[in-house]
Amino acid sequence: MLTAPATDVALQPARASAPDLVVLYGVFGLLLFGPLAFGAVEPWSIFILEAGAALLLVLWTIRQVASGELSVSWNPLFGPMLAFAFCIGLQLVTGRTEYRYETFSAALLYCAYGILCFLVVQVLRRTAQVQALTATFSVYGFLLASFALLQGLSSTTKLYWVRTPHNGGWIYGPYVNHNHYAGLMEMLVPIPLIFSLTHSARGPRKTMAGIAAALMASTIFLSGSRGGMFAFVAQLGGLAGILAWRQKSRAVTWALAPFLVIGVGLVLWLGGNELAQRLATLHTEARTELSGGTRLDIDRDALRMFARRPISGWGLGVFPDVYPQFRSFPSNFFINEAHNDYLQLLVEMGGLGFATMLWFLWALFRNAGRKLQHWSEDTNGAVVLAAMVGVTGILVHSLVDFNLQIPANAGLFYVFCVVAAMESRFGKTRRKSVHRVNRVEGIPGSDQSGSVQREGLQEPI
Image (cartoon, rainbow, N blue to C red; front, side, top):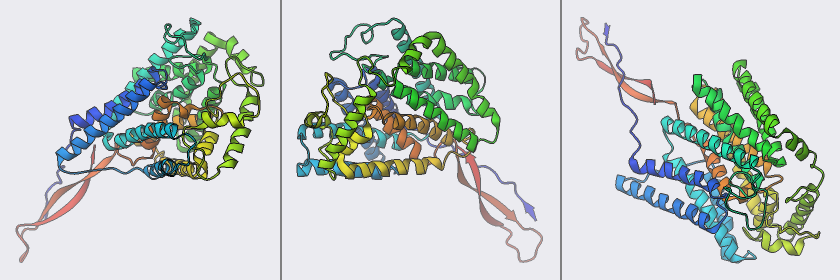
């Protein structure tokens, strides 16, 4: 019996179409635009974010129609996101909102977030795309951190050295509020940091990624954001725990040492005295910012607001309109947010909206946790780890600030969440059918044409 050797079928995955590439990089272009536009908090930048998301959705739809088939990829987070949309719609339809215009405006913004998340799941499919985005975000974060550092050293009170904030603030980088700059960096730092710890990072690329991550991380501390400092320490603690749990080799764990040395050195060199003074204000009033005691007062007031409307809430986006009648202390500050994203969600969306948030987080951590095995060799695991470390920073920081009320930070947060929760699709293998021909000769009654068997071979994408 002679057996012909198995041959591999040289089939390459289909290239991404030009419209899909435009959609993909259009989505991430909008996400990178937001921080540069002061966090996308002004009407003109919000319009660009919403209109850009709508146009990209139209382009993707045209691409689907032109292809003759509608192909939609599902994500575990789409369920809670649709449930949250239903809660918002219920407020608008039933009139269970104190200010319909604000709720409708906030609903449009959340619709833009949802569109961006949907499109990323549909078009982000190739390992090469992940590599390009990793390089883009790393360079972007490094340049933004360098700019923020220079701006901070110049002691300017103007954004980009030319624009004075209308209502004051503690500017850092392109943000009026230094806490929101810290929130952005909490999401961006893990990208070059995790890349530098993977096996695919070697030589100069590994060194450059580590330096970029260290510089970006140092600006979290130099910005003076106490919530950002606490959140980033929590991120490092979580990352260290994952390394100890999942990584058998200590080489990856020790690779964190240069990052920490460079980061701490930059902080001490450029702002050691200011950082010590900032940490000393943990129990005292800080300039241009609410004290810890005032934040606790707002938290108690928010709980009283929730008790008045515990089911459907007061209406998405109406916190600054309703809060004055519940405020229990005199203040010269305009309290436009709850300074606690969880309590603000509870006030505005009630128990129903809060339950969808818990569902969202449960689905996120449940699906992301399954892909962390062998993350240093697997692109899927590395992507999930970077996204989850960044997301965790915002979740911790949201206990004392309102990063998720800033469109630039919120959009990036939600996109990172769906990327972490989606199925494995990068750097994996797929099964191709090949033919193996068993030709039996010299045996009476045998089939001289041979029998054909199909076997699956693993072909890397």
